[in-house]
Image (tube, rainbow, N blue to C red; front, side):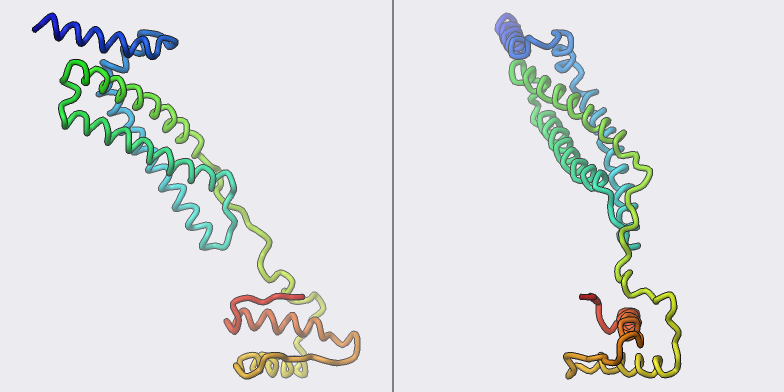
Length: 215
């Protein structure tokens, strides 16, 4: 019986080594005997990556609330981090499942299970650590072109009482759901375009419209 178990162990071990004969044999043996420490290391690094991902997400959420644009590199990192976290969790879960079923204690199946768990954890740990280092962003966002920049007040605009009255009249008319179009007319150079820009600015500030477009 002892000879049979030993033969199974040697046969399985040899098949593992032959399957990966290109890599150093010492490393392959290490995957078998260090599977527990490799899995624990992966779990530790995985938690660090999750914490890093959450901190970056908080910064992204804060920038989004301010109306800022998210850097493309940050968006790509977040997407890749989610993928790596998913893969790492699967490897850890599989290793823990092997342990619960007692596969690690069986001669032939146990050897291959240890090798698979140890190698997978070691390889994934490198990806996790690398991604942590790449997630150290100085900033996650930038200020885009302000919306409605064309409706900012003109340099020479003055709110004369006559214009103010006209602007208020147009603004009130825009609130009427039965009105689909408002026209502003007058001689050239009297400030029709400037007046319309001021009306548009006020309409957006007052919440009459969610979006204003100049064409």
